[in-house]
Length: 200
Image (cartoon, rainbow, N blue to C red; front, side, top):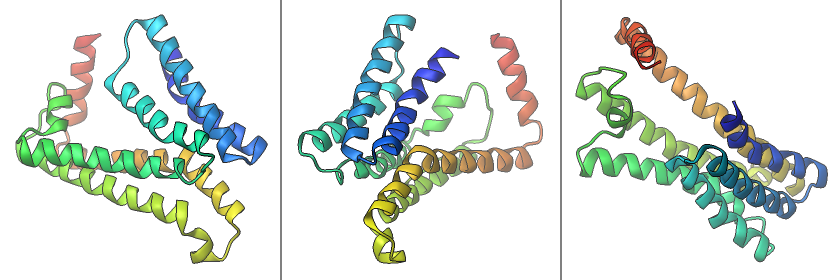
């Protein structure tokens, strides 16, 4: 439970600080500090950190520190786009260059699927991450021109999207992929449950 709290606490701290101050620079400074604290606590308490946690902290520092030091709130808005493009690129390189499907590597022991279906899942997620990267650009930089709203409202909407919207889209897409797999392989759920039971 505590690891999950540490995982989501920086994003919540960012959201709350922005809503209290309406200042993206302040909120960015808060998320940078919160990410570092959560990372250190996670290492001290559990003696390990995942590669994803390292990636997230690196991304926050890469975009957060210049945002604060240069006093430019536009910089942090690129974080969601760049992270999604990095994930899409990683899948593409693994799948098309290294000929090694990342999803089969991560979940192949628990989920037995034919190689062509792992390939399809990888391709779908790669396309999804590219589209999510583009959507963030639209929300972060073009809402005033598209809908005639103020820069302040557009910034607030982007903060809402960054904190919750992108994660919700990921969840919905993952759920859709899960439903698709279960329809193609009805016995899949039982296999995963048995695999989890054997490990516990």
